[in-house]
Image (cartoon, rainbow, N blue to C red):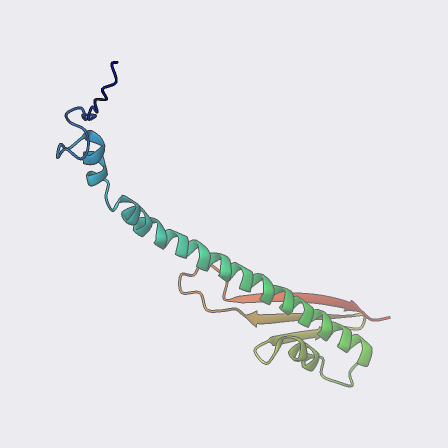
Length: 139
């Protein structure tokens, strides 16, 4: 090089993006536009059904535990007081007014069965009423 500087312009090879030519990658991108939105739209109802089912199961377990606690409290109250008070008031104090209490007293034991309503289930998948049972032995 004898001191002269020549600038060469880099040329793009023909068919590169930006030259107006449609490449296979660009064509694939154009064909797949909205695919994520379509997949999300098909999966969303299933996710919502599973979420509602899980929330209903959580509610069912909570009401079931409360109903069993109400039966235990009513049996305890029946044994402690004998025939003096109504043990169903102890069950209502634990769960609330919606509980149905069935008390069976014999000479040696007290059997209490409580039935508590759960959120209405339109699909019929979950039970609408749960039951708790407690037995107390008189000494």
